Structures are given as structure tokens and as C-alpha cells.
Length: 294
Image 1 (cartoon, rainbow, N blue to C red):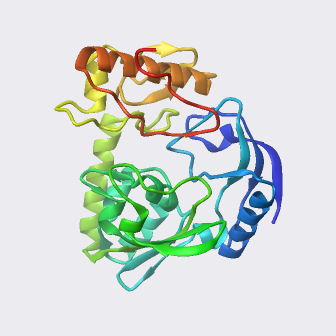
Image 2: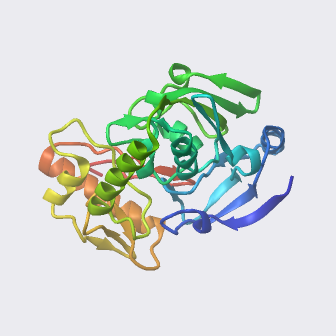
Image 3: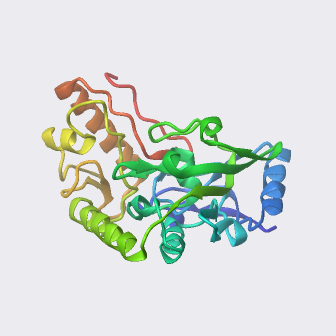
């Protein structure tokens, strides 16, 4: 297995920011994945996995560890009976195509999530009233101690999070779906895609939703809009004019610019609504938001 050094992670994130990884590898089998994790363990390197980079903000200084991008059989998807079996690196769009062609429904909501199966497990991804927890049967998780099948409860799936930590890699996942006419699936996907396109800056470089929706009558986006943050810009990063819970790379943005915008958004939400917003985007490398009130 080839290990590369100093690979720029900005190439692999949808917002296009972030520094280099100390080491980078592309395992294509469970055995190669175990080998990569053993290699990192021997060198006492931290490990992180990236999918399509769509829910990820990487520090400008990069990540001092091994970054894995799954390929080969770890990025394949197929149908077995009424189950979707997919590698952790399989794109949600590919999985949806497989399910639709087999006349299996339940995965339509994932058309609004431009990521991978493993990333979906990692954060219990969801949209339009459903999430991974609703359809996932089990996931094969590989770590420094081997490979283990875990169910939704063992994975600790709750709203936009799981109990998984860096160094634990979702190699495969199995979803239970249900028979549904292909035309009905196509119609539902078209409806959801139209809603997403109308509400979100799908043609801009973003990392997706910035904050989780709080337990409040207003969503995070509506709250930030009410705070007057649409279009607010720091450096090369800008809060979207279309949806205030998205940050766009408006040109030569740095991750530090995005962090500064997030800090300002949290400050205003607390000041105006008394709500402490929690970020949904995953941080990689030495990144953190300043404490509220600091």
C-alpha cells in the first residue's frame, strides 16, 4: 500500500480550504485498511478518514497524521435482496442509483447529502425527515484492534452524531430498504433535489450545513438570517446570501476565515436568541471555536 506525504487536503474538501496531511493513503480492501491502521499505530500517528470532503473543515496548518480515502471494494455498492450493501467510501449518489434501479426505496433522502456511506454513519447524516439510523442494519468498523460489526445502538447514532472517533473507520454498511416502484423513487428524488436547489447554494463551494438545528422554533439558518448575517464576509469566506447556515468560499478563503464567521454567528445567536449553536461540520487538525463570551 502506497503512503504519500504532504498531500494538500484542500484538493479533497468541497469548500477548497485546508493544509497538508502528514501521510495519505487510499486502501481498497479491508485487509489494506487494517494494514494502514497498523502502519499508523506503529508510528503513533493519529488517523482520520475523508469521504467526499463535504462536511469537513481542515485546519490551514493541515493534519499531523494519516488521512485515509477509501477506494476499490471499500467504495463499491451493490444490492443483495432487499438490502443495500456499500463500502464506507461509496458515494451516496451511487448507492441511490443502485437502490432505484433495483426498485428499493428508503434511501431517497440521501440525494440531499453529497457525501459517502461512511461519512453518513460517522455523523448519522440525515435530511428531509429521515437519517442513517432509520435504515442502517449494521456497519463494519475497523480500528487498531481489528474489524467489528456494530448495530445502530452500538454506534450510538443520535441527531447528527455517532459514538465513533478518529481511528475507527467504517469499511462497509448494510441498509434495509423496501420495495417501491422505480418511477415513484425518481419522482421523490426529483422533488427533494428541487427543494434543495431552491433553498441551498448548491453551485457554490461550501462544506454544507454549518450548525445543527437547535431546539428552538427557528432553524439555525432562519436564526442567523434574523441576526442579519446573510452575505457577511470575513477574508475570503462569506455567509451565503441564499441560506445563512452555509459558508461559501468566495475566493481564496482560508479555514481561519470560516472559523471567524462561525464564531461571529454563534456570538450573535447567543446575544439575540440566547441559543448556543453547535457546529455540524467536522473539524480536522488544530481547529476550534473560541468560547462564547470570550
